[in-house]
Image 1 (spheres, rainbow, N blue to C red):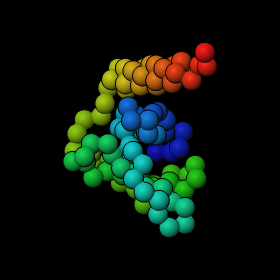
Image 2: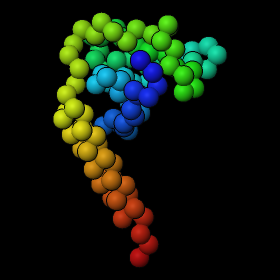
Image 3: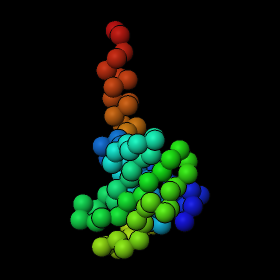
Image 4: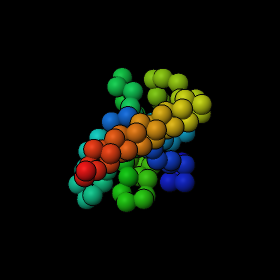
Length: 101
């Protein structure tokens, strides 16, 4: 596992999501020494990873043993498209509301 396998996306709630091997992770918290902890988005799953800058800290991460199946490529693509469209629509509405007459 290396940092090239990490792709980024945005959630429905406009939060950053990382995808590693078709498993989605959300930002959990900042740890000491500017280390980020990212947790699996499945609430029952205990998997996580730690990252310092762009470096994935594999020895301090638990990326295997998920209690669920990975998301399908189609699901990830669909969610990404839906979230991008939702964000674009929201931005267009707010821009339209700011037009002076």
